[in-house]
Image 1: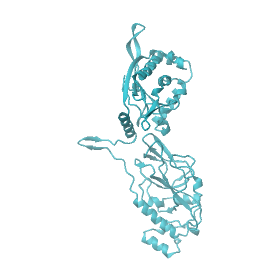
Image 2 (image 1 turned 90 degrees about the vertical axis):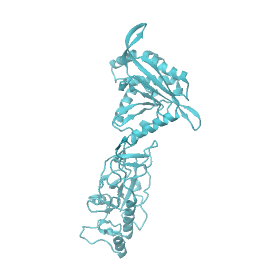
Image 3 (image 1 turned 90 degrees about the horizontal axis):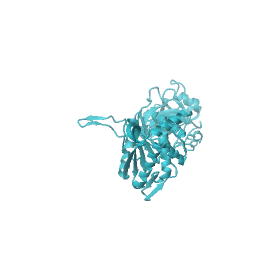
Length: 456
């Protein structure tokens, strides 16, 4: 007989509590394999394809595309193989348990035993609608060809054609079915030769009652227009950004310092590097390399504040975040161990993470754990900014546009490529002298890239 296992929305990590269904990748009645992606969801951090830890036939989907589900809510149910012996003779076998996923997400994975045993009920075509909200038909029934697929997977006995006698012996079973409005022809019996037992009918009744008690999945709330203007729900990525920026402003006493720097020599150095052959070096990678060198000299800015213990925690490794504008909004992917990477490696990783961000495929691990952030807002054609620190970090370096300006160079007025650099820092981790020393070192490296040779 088959077991119908319920797969719930797993904990995707990093404190995420809900996700929005973007696209279903399987339909009711479809056969799925272990670790096959079954739904694409959007969290406050990224788009994620969720793999199913069971192999079998999809018997129900919970929630329409666009609905938000909390972690732990049912996603779908899958009919998986189990013993063909009568269910009343013995407890659920461990056959279904051995088919668990090897692709573990937080909240489910290998070795998790099914919560309870369920049976597959064959329904007439059209009894359940793919993607519909939970209802009795979708919990207990398998539409269309699901029954046939379940037979192929689980070697289930069939009850024959619709015109054949219903395999029921007990009058009590018929009475329970009649009193609860169940069509016995829609049930697959778990007894010998498909015999419908009392347990089969009672399970179908319980499944219908449980499904009826589950409210329909919420639909996305449209923007509300009224005399006061347009209301746009603050949710998803935009909501997560709002919460984080508000917390940063609320908790961190931030200060911003800035300086103009002549970037002409830095641009010339990059041109020379790329002319020498090999992978191209990005300008952002050069600024990142300068930042990691500056953080070696001023480690106070690569730290965080532990309010609970009232301690400043200085970090040994630099996980460098960088702002990336995408169709979903501003995201901050993180280059791990940036202090050990050269300009070529940084260029490659920036390019990879930017592409993944634009595709909406960043994992939570690639969006968290940053210790210092680099923000190149110059791509928007602006000169300066006062960045908000990416909590719980202690500092962020902003880079304005590089533009030709009159500049005194070697005692004479000349046209040079000038950039404004701004550093926002947490005043709890250091004073202005340290922040100014960091920013001045960055500016010196921009104006004279050979300064970095001392630390290479």
